[in-house]
Image (cartoon, rainbow, N blue to C red; front, side, top):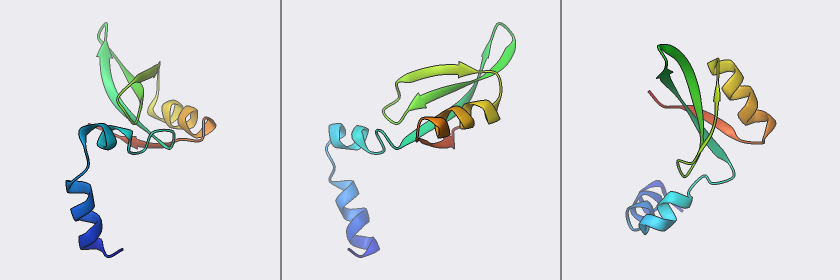
Length: 74
């Protein structure tokens, strides 16, 4: 499938199908502040919060241990 066809296919995904993209394969990490302390929140691809971790490296390692590719969100 050509790149343009892939983009067109993504534009026509249902909201449910879009939410399912990356499920079981991708997790995202974002910094959050709790009680004036910066920690990192690890989420499943669908946005489900999985855990809080003290460091970005720890969050990425935890994702990797669970066979997930971690991406960061600012």
